[in-house]
Picture 1 (spheres, one colour):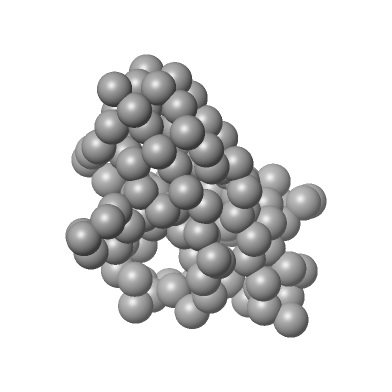
Picture 2: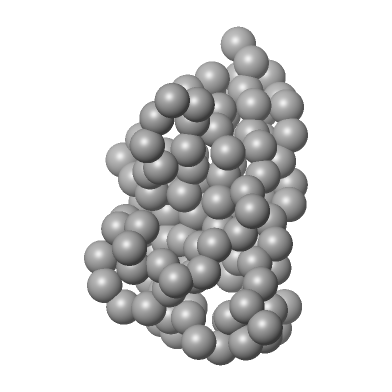
Length: 124
C-alpha cells in the first residue's frame, strides 16, 4: 500500500522553528530512492524545498532554505524529517512529502507518491 503521511505543520512567528515529519508505508519506502519535500503557497506553483536519497543519505536544498532547513531520515521508522529553523513569512505554504526514483531531485515529475500536505503559516 502506497502511503505518505505528513505532520508537524502549524502557525508560528517569524524566527521560530518547526519540524515536519513524513511517515511512509513500508512499501513506499522500499520502492523509493529519493524522498523530497515540496511546498506550494497560495497562487504559486509547487516548488522543491529539499530532498534526500535514502540509500546514500545525500541531501539537496533549494537556495531559499539553505542554512535554515535540514532534511534527515530514520530508515528504521520509514520516516523523513524537515527541520525548519529561522522561519520567515515567505515560508508560508502547504508542505508536501513525496517519494520517487532517480532523476533530478527538484523535478516534481520524479516523484510517484505524494502525501496530502501539512500547512505551515509564519507570521511576522
